[in-house]
Image (cartoon, rainbow, N blue to C red; front, side, top):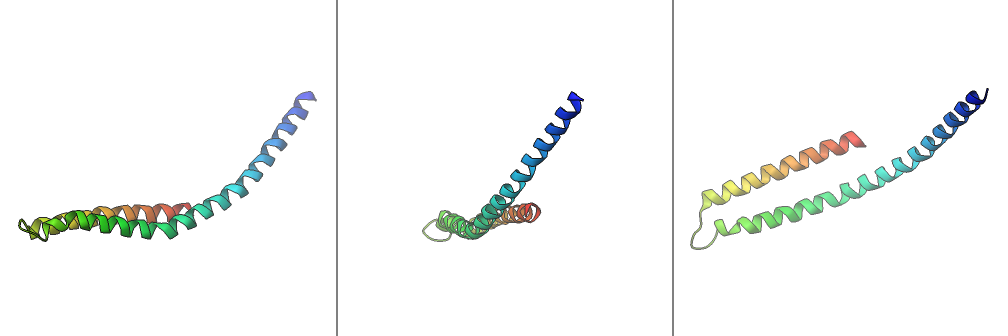
Length: 95
């Protein structure tokens, strides 16, 4: 009889804690995902601007190499696009 009481008490206490945690985590995840969705395009724009500024030397000046500049910009855009795609996919799965 003593084992049954301990088992029942343990099951009741463990399930109550789980219900309390789920509500708090859900709200926190929603808040964080909303914040990330708002800030992410701004951060990506800044990264694109910095990437263009680093590659601008290939387009202008004495040693301008248009092919090299376009190649570097395209590689940068492909990498950034892959990051955006992965991020969007992960956000759509989580929330």
